[in-house]
Length: 424
Image (cartoon, rainbow, N blue to C red; front, side, top):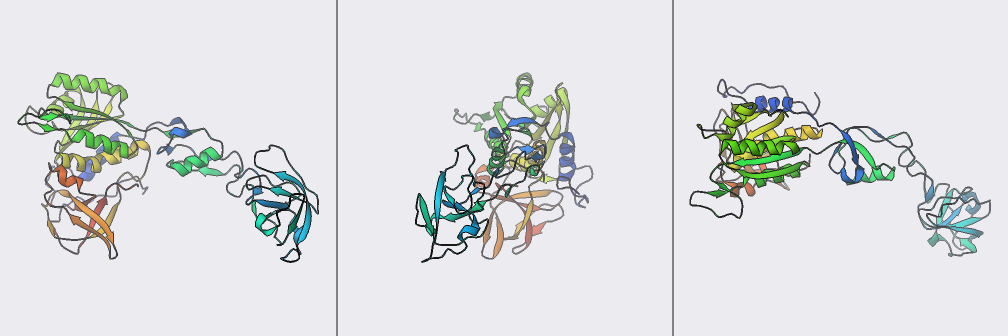
């Protein structure tokens, strides 16, 4: 099985018939999105992108043998007898510094003064460090013998011409970009960053900083999820709050599709005719809304809309449920679009620091605090973790995964944990 595939599934016995498991819904999403088409990108703008080619080096790295230290380039046979108190004297026939742009050569019984990084002259096979000499400029007394190859950075010692500098699938970080630049690549074929539009719905929502009425609240979801999208290396377009008028919602969504590879919505998917997102997306696209065996959150949706067939993932409106849904369903989708594996955040095992209970029939993702102590990894569930309590969510750095058939976990148990904010 490849690292990007989902593991074989056994349906938990406590999940009600007709209800989808987390894996059911996630598989639908991953089948509905694919890696974005790759194209040539400037190397200087490729941080975090995934290569869609084997990068073959067109030159040796280093291109030529050079001095590893400041000193004197010699033929090692000329200084075999050198030792403190009985140095070998050689004439200095030239001085070489990096970037002179012309080749040098020495004959037996002579040497050149050389700086680190400068090309080794023909006829020399070693560099004597300056502190093993008297520093002479026309003649130098060398008080230490060296072996051939000493003090030299050898051509192709790092990478040979025709070798694979970076394999397809490599994620370009600062070090990889440094290597590309070193072998002269200014562009590279890579998958682009997905453009993700984030929208919140709800007549009670107001923009952060706006005046609140007696029954209104500031919208946390669009800011939180846009930040989470950027943290994954994608491009986030935060639309903010969209009111509950279907015509307005359709117009805003249509306008956004010109810059969207994926749309994320929160809210408006449960309840009666006021479930704006559910009713509107069903009208303008093929979007399925399902009852998922997950807590917090229950109803989730996925499908495509308008002629562009842009994929849409819908999440619950409560902030904690929206964040959990993002971690479980959106993170794998974005990583698949980026061409990265594994799609899902790896689970680690940690010792539970206190008892917790859970309803059976759902997979619960409990906000928690994870830490590594001298005794190993431990995780503590946070109190007051209702689906609306964003203050408690901000204190979490992990999610404890409580299985569908588990009703209680106890102090000292080893539990599955998603450690948030880690690169993977």
